[in-house]
Length: 119
Image (cartoon, rainbow, N blue to C red; front, side, top):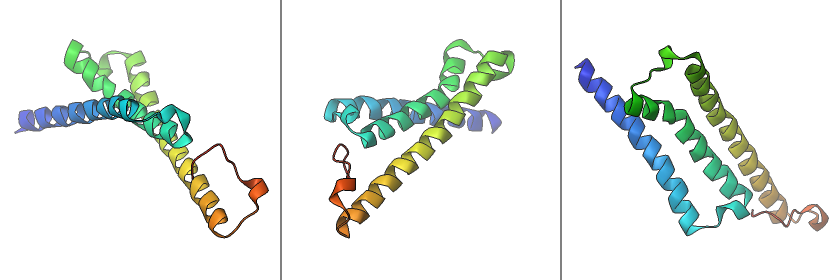
């Protein structure tokens, strides 16, 4: 049973990794995400997720384990921390855009509107 769980765990990480890559490629083909803050936030999150999951890819390809390298361990810690930071940035982007939309619906001052972003 532990071998099955290990295999399923590895397979689910590989699925998530390749899904994040597929999203970035697909979004790049379908939209000019680099032209909007939301696009940058969205792609950055999937990039951070792929980075955080990449140690499993390295292990599958090379057999290297996090326990074998201090640098590899720090890479994994940093990549996972990046997911948290980008998630908080995504929250800030969404909150700012929601507040901007709320101000518009309430007839806020047009001089304070940022016309360079969507919202």
